[in-house]
Image (cartoon, rainbow, N blue to C red; front, top):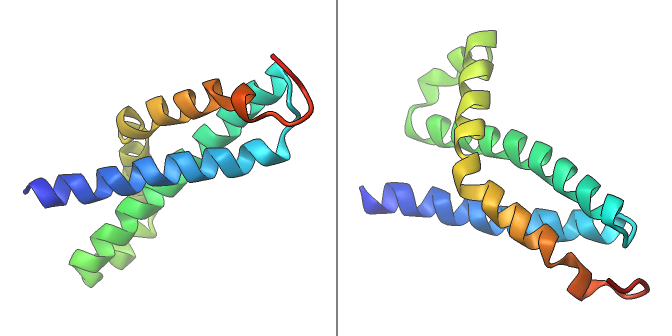
Length: 108
């Protein structure tokens, strides 16, 4: 039970840090750039976490694949991705908030 909760949580946390840092490199070193980084990272994390839950469903039971492809299945995965924001959204916000420390050309 603990492993079933811990592994997805750790994956989401690592993905939130890595994805946000990767997006941060492409954005301008400004406050609007930080806001845009947070928005883009949040949207991508929402989609990726929903996809991750779909992948976990498929690993457990391959027969659910036709159900996941329907509109109802997609809505379910999108809802799971949104609920997972309780785990990854604080990490994204902390990573974005500490971005000025990593700026090369601009200063805060």
